[in-house]
Image (cartoon, rainbow, N blue to C red):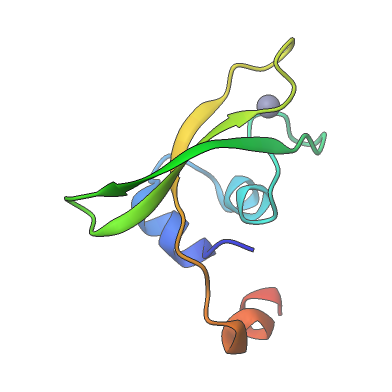
Length: 84
Ligand SMILES: [Zn+2]
């Protein structure tokens, strides 16, 4: 589970529903269909001071979604907070 707040802070162009999909491991571009995405790699962003995942939609034939999202995970104690 990715940090939805962090995603929202660093990805200004996604709706709340899309952020929710991303944080659960699904491509935001394929909604309402739940297509998982692949993590192609991780790298450190000097400007944001966080690790980023380079991710791409698994549904390559129909979707070209490709993006970088913050890789930092939520503190396990906060999981319930984000899921409520
Ligand atoms: Zn997709």
